[in-house]
Image: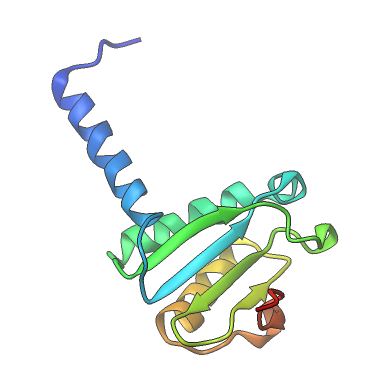
Length: 127
């Protein structure tokens, strides 16, 4: 294994800083990937990686990606919830990396719900 050089450490530091920025703050949109054990077993890590890649590739600084535990619908994993500022959250199910690309482009970037992948609109929270 090659020895790490100071410039290698700086590259690693910059990459980790970018990933942290993508997961913090309040912005125009928030994407929550449900990563309970069932979600992870169904491929939620690939879904999160795809989202983080899309955010980085498009240099989108007003979208936050976070994770949560199980959403209670194990048979529909992997799942994510998209929340645009001022709109009801939308839960997307049975995801693949290709579906995530479509949802990201249509819903997150352009504000158009992708009905064919949506399970529910609205929050399950009680105010």
